[in-house]
Length: 138
Image 1: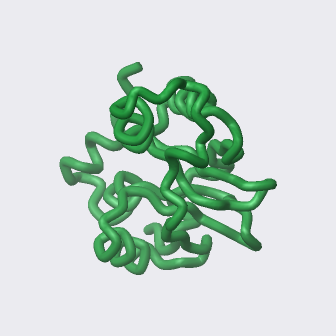
Image 2 (image 1 turned 120 degrees about the vertical axis):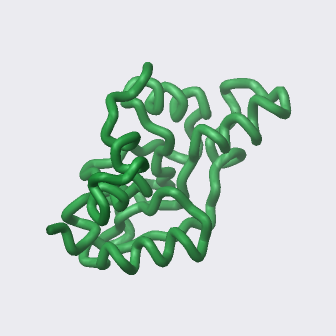
Image 3 (image 1 turned 180 degrees about the vertical axis):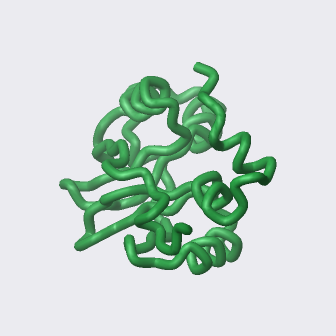
């Protein structure tokens, strides 16, 4: 049974630099069936950008696709280490109302863990686990 975030995380998460356009982040999401991309500033984690961030902070304000990621991402982000327990990750997600946590070592993203990852680890027969395990609908 999985005990730590390292047991369930997605390794080598997709990343984008803060000065890249949001269209680059959106393309990564499209091409890799993702809902979020880690934002780096000079290779070090600086935040996370989600599909919702792009929708609400760019599209809804009629900003162009060339808008820099730094204008749309969420800079205050909760992160965990690979040795964080699954229970602790669940508590963090619950207390901060987030669906994804970057997994960080030495200031660099080494993975990302989602609500679905944790659901599959804690209760593989739950509806959320089933939905999370389903193939994407590109």
